[in-house]
Length: 241
Image (cartoon, rainbow, N blue to C red; front, side, top):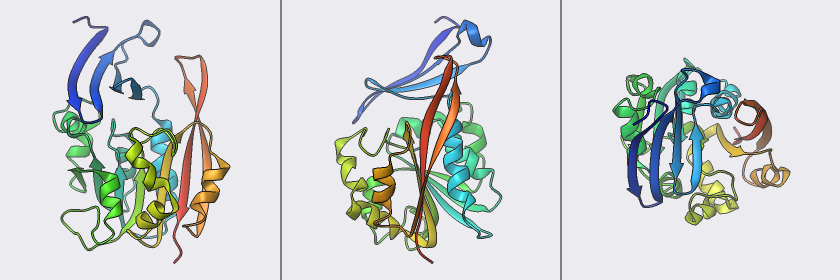
């Protein structure tokens, strides 16, 4: 395999073929770029992770508690998780991912942030369906503490609330589905969502039907592949106290 391109893992999953690859491009010198594809969808690249980091920063930033119990839906390359762990107030962080190979990449050190997040005692990785857990309002996202509520739930799974990896996820973004999620939160708890592209006012208004406060942020970041900038959205919603 050429040093400029290496397939690190390939698995068949219920959602399609999952590929993890590492490559180098002349314009970036010796920089290793990690990329993930699911079927025909390009899911993520280590070149672009500012929006994922801001998902944690913005979601946790409005909380005023000294200790935080956090859930992250979607592990990916780990940028949202590591960003959350940088907040010293985070006492517990449960990461839920439907794709077991993604969890194994981190456990086996195949991706750059794997060692950092798997060695942090506050962090636990759970192989489960985030959306199914959200529907079950009688139990938490933490299998070791099924009765507890959470201070923040950070979600980065679908491309947008309408551009979904799986059509079965559609119900989650309905008023009923978001209402179920809100029941997992403590009073004043936060739900934050990453989405590709600029925020949609219609979805911010939709969140307002369930949550007491909502705000949408535009995250602009350099895109060296296109020679310009790209944009992502982070929606932040908070329950009443």
